[in-house]
Image 1 (tube, rainbow, N blue to C red):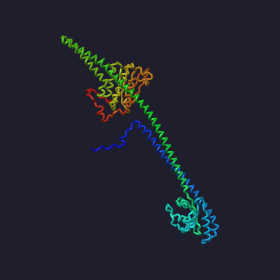
Image 2 (cartoon, helix red, strand yellow):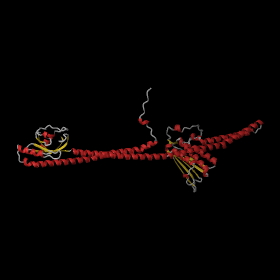
Image 3 (cartoon, one colour):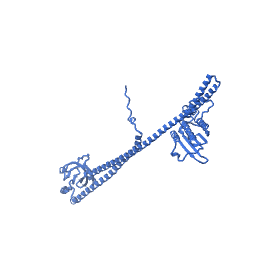
Image 4 (cartoon, one colour):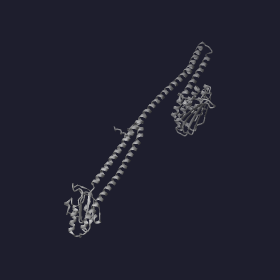
Length: 493
């Protein structure tokens, strides 16, 4: 049996909502700090490299100026002999060799002389080179050093940078030489200085710069870590606080649900006991009396049966009313408009309060949850009118518009008490929760005096809760669930 392919790593990672928020808050910070760190390192290294290169150039220029000064002084000292000698004056040449051999300075400084054929004539610190031809001498980098000396001398004067063995250790090191020519004798004369101290200084400077860059990177990392800890701690505190608030709200909401369930059960129980139970008891007594009269041959048994049938019809009507209150069938069969109209008419007939219901034909249709929500809000509003308002007239209006649908309810009762928003009862809270579930808005206002006294309730359902008339979903969402009466006209709401 083949083994299932392993899932990708990302699909196996499951993050909580808090972890996602933490990543959302910290990831941009980490990326920004990383970009800043890279930029700071690059800029610091570039600036330091420019400064080190400038320092290196200045030090080498100082060395070159020092070499040129040495060579100029040597030529000035030789002019007394060289200026008066001829091209083949061997005595003068020997005198100049002796003078240059004696001109050593420092621990490593000396003068050298090569003829144009490459033969070494003067090398006081490396005497084994004297008298040998070094035309093909190359340093560790492959440069023909003596050829460079001679070519520079033929051109006049100049500097040659090359590797040369140190007199004390014999190891090659970088050297800068200044070369000039004694043209009448076809000699290349010069002196050089090792610049390994310059390289050591610049290398130390680069190491110091790198150390400072690393310290700066560590400082940035420490600051970033502290910021992340602060973000994590603040997020944790906020998460704990919000969770506590959410738990408290959930507990309160659960309690309200339980209270609403108990209240609804109590209302249904009272209606069953006060209405259905009494009617059925009356039917039982009427049927029992009719049976006794039938047994006695009393002609009035038919009256008792008629009375029992009337009581039974009343019980059936009461059952229908309770069923309609729990879940009105007209809402499924004919739509929201007829259901609200029946609700208002039944309310007026039961309470004696004058009622008026107006609506317009909807171009679009409402979702089922919007229908039920608006119907329950209307029920709650009428219940509040009956219990608390003392109104003599109620107006209800339902209509659709470009932004959705709006239900308005207005009574001429005593209005809302002061600070009603701060102490809303169960009914108003239920309205607000239903509106929040639909994503709509609820506006409640009231005046306790004046010509326009009473309470106004306005509920607006957004366009997202409206089904377009051309939508194919109408076939499944707005199809009647029960057969309609032949003369009933289905409301498009």
